[in-house]
Amino acid sequence: MTTMLIRGGTVVSATGRGAADVLVDGETIVAVLAPGSTLLGHDLTASVDTVIDATGKYVIPGGIDAHTHMELPFGGTAAIDTFETGTIAAAWGGTTSIIDFAVQTAGQKVFDGLAAWHEKAGGNCAIDYGFHQIVGGVDADSLDALPKLIDEGITSYKMFMAYPGVFYADDAQILRAMQVAAEHGLMTMMHAENGPAIDVLVAQLLEQGKTDPYFHGVARAWQMEEEATHRAIMLAHLTGAPLYVVHVSAKQAVEQLAAARDRGQNVFGETCPQYLYLSLEEQLGAVSEKYGAFEGAKWVCSTPLRSRAEGHQDHMWQSLRTNDLQMVSTDHCPFCMKGQKELGLGDFSKIPNGIGSIEHRMDLMYQGVVTGELTLERWVEITSTTPARMFGLYGKKGVIAPGADADIVVYDPNGHTSIGMPVDENGNPTGKKHHMNMDHAAWEGFEIDGKVDTVISRGSVVIQNDQFHGRAGHGQYLRRGLSQYLV
Ligand code: URP
Ligand code: ZN
Ligand code: ZN
Ligand code: ZN
Image 1 (spheres, rainbow, N blue to C red):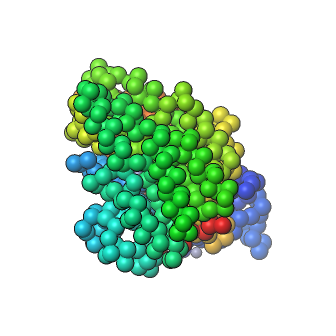
Image 2: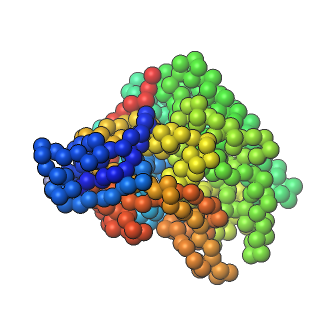
Image 3: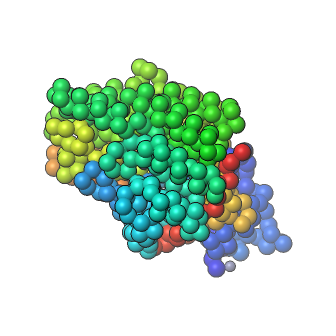
């Protein structure tokens, strides 16, 4: 076993910060020590195999991105990051675990869908990975499979109130699934948008010739999100099922979550960097020489970007501070413009939905610390500790403490990160390049007053000195327990 000492840094947890040295043996953290400690008279610096100098830097538990879609078939194409490219990009950005969504489609057996996901991910991930289960067809068979997922280390599943004809579940199906979930302690994750009503609005807009990407967001109005969020909460209330609403973007949806939490319900919400930083107005204003107004396709995702004039973004930041929202995931679902987003030229409803951000989540949220939106501790909490607790990984993940996996990020507050991938007219990068498999950056031009310095995954250095030292296949499958966040 190799040993490692990360010395001189400020260890930051969800509850505090302090100068400390972190001792790692093999894949595990074995001690968090007063700075410069000796152990049983041994000078640690001389006794360990590797010393990492974290002087002037933060030492935090590795990021956990609990919402990713590697290789997701969607909109007639598939998300362009493989488990290999996506997890390498994650590592570059200080994320050391992902929870991706295995997919069951209507008519398919849940365990067949799950097996296909193990096939895609197994042996290909650079960091540890777990799965949630998408249940795209709620029937007797999938209801029967739900509790059996727990033995597979899958303790959460997602349903969709959106996307009729694809993943959509109606209220009757949702009620039945929640009854099963409540009985067994599974977390129900919900894509909360009123899909059937949205589809009417989409058809009407297209009939009026409103085909640009911007109208994706017009059709998916906040009322559609608030209404579905409320309905999901009521069905969860009735059945007693814990509920986690994914990719929350409307402030009115947060108010529904907050009201439910005030009633004592086990109701939680995540938001994503795009709903904190980007807006519908900016999407409307995005026009390029190559694509004209279709440039806005880069930011087509569901739920959509919201109006800044309506104040959704500020409300998301505030909700993260007040714990009305508990955590931030990316909903990483990358599609290239060329050949993928382009499927929706002339019809926004055919643009594959999704943004790629897995590489930037830790940086983008750290910038919230710089701007005073979040404390340092809250940054760690919403990007690592709460994701671990929410999805049954805490103890091994989400914390720097003896016995935890040595998933550690050394973050430099004096460093700088310029995000993006400028390209020439042929789509070739002209300078810096992110590591996601996309031909563009949804975050072009974002500047971060901080930098991922060193990334350690189960005791192995994967990023150091601006180099990737990891390997596809290092990442192990995470068998998750039940949520540790329930009241
Ligand atoms: O636009 C998105 N969010 N694409 C991924 C699928 C989903 O609904 O999470
Ligand atoms: Zn050893
Ligand atoms: Zn969704
Ligand atoms: Zn998603």
